[in-house]
Amino acid sequence: FNITGDTKVKSIGISWDIALKDNITINVKEVLIAQINNTFKNDSNFRIKKLRLSKMPGLNKSMFQMSIGLHNQFSFDYRLNKLNLDIYRKNESLSIANWKLKDTVNVEAGKNADIPLQVEVDNLRLLSQARMSDVLNPNPVFVLKGDAEVYIQGRTFNIPIQETRQVTFNPLSGIHF
Image (cartoon, rainbow, N blue to C red; front, top):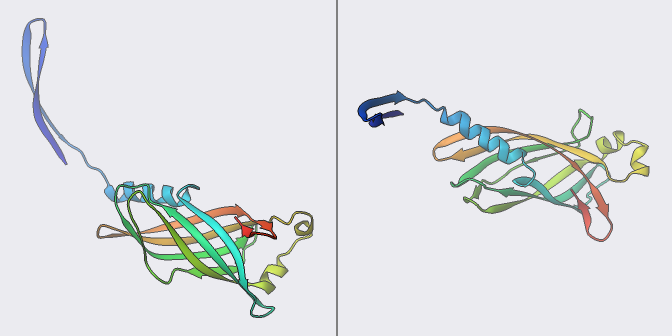
C-alpha cells in the first residue's frame, strides 16, 4: 500500500512543508501463516482435552474417544477443512494410531471449539513399542504429528502440527493428556 501526505515542521520561527510518499509492501500470506502456526502450536489454543477407551473390538485394535480443543484468538472466523493426525510413541518412527477429520469445523472469532473424534489404535504395534519403563512409569509420552488445512476468507493454508503430550492413567476418570 502507499502512504502519501505532507507535514509541517517548525523550527526557529521557520515553517517547512515536507511531502511524504512511501510504498510499503506486506506479505499478508506469510503473516497469516505465522499467526495460524502459532495458534496450532500454542498449548492454550490447540490441545488434547481428553482421551477415553470406548471399545476393544478385538486384540488387534482399540477404539478411543478423544476431544481436541481449539481456541480462535483471531478477530475473524476460520474453517478447519482437514485435520490429519498420526500418534506416535515418543522417539518411535511408526505411528500407533491415525485420525482424519471427516467433517469441516467452523471456529468463530474469539471462541472455543471442541472436535470430538474416534481414534483406532493398532494394539500390536503399540505392544511392539512397549518398554520396561512403562511398568515403572505408567504415564507414557506420545507425539501427535500431522497437518491441518485452514480456510480463511477465500484463502486456504496448510499448517503442520506437532505436539508432545504425557498421558496420565486414572482408573476413575479414564486417560487424560
